[in-house]
Length: 212
Image 1 (cartoon, rainbow, N blue to C red):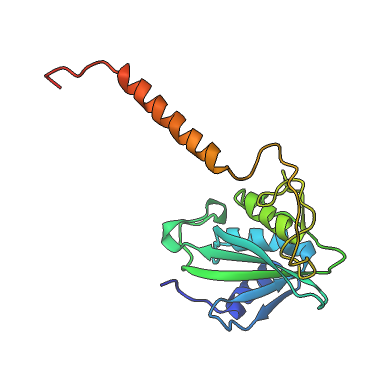
Image 2 (image 1 turned 90 degrees about the horizontal axis):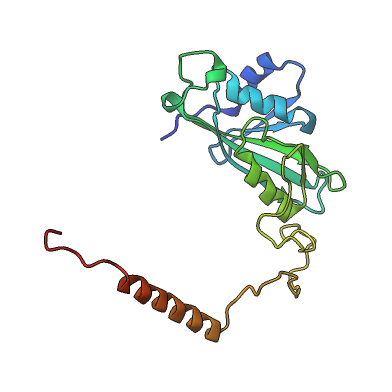
């Protein structure tokens, strides 16, 4: 089981490291400490959470979002972080001491008409596809992302399916160059082709010697 650290403790460490940054600690109703950070400071906060010797949140577990329409701010971008304890000591922390295992949730609130936030790929390259999923499904732009494009929906898809105002019933013809499904005839033809290929390959294999 991961060791726990309440959001107040993390808040105090961050407050000492980043005295000019406004950071709000929320009650951990589900057992995971939660912080709310301003968009402009998110990269600085995430980097400190990773590199501070007392924190060392080295693992970006997830980047996700939520749409609370009609509430304003409408969106929340949510980062789930983990410190791996003695299993991984962050080199940038400049220490040989491990921080205790724990998890943390960080939230950023975004207005519906200004849904953009700096990318976390400058800290964790693995944020690349996670941020692309949020962009694809919510339309939230991650500024500075190296390749911000759809990853789940087709490239020509219109709209963002996890927005609260997205129509729940929609019919759209794909503009893809190939069908998304095979007909029964095409499936049977593929099976026959694979069987014929396997038979041809078996017929050209050299016979095994008795020593084998």
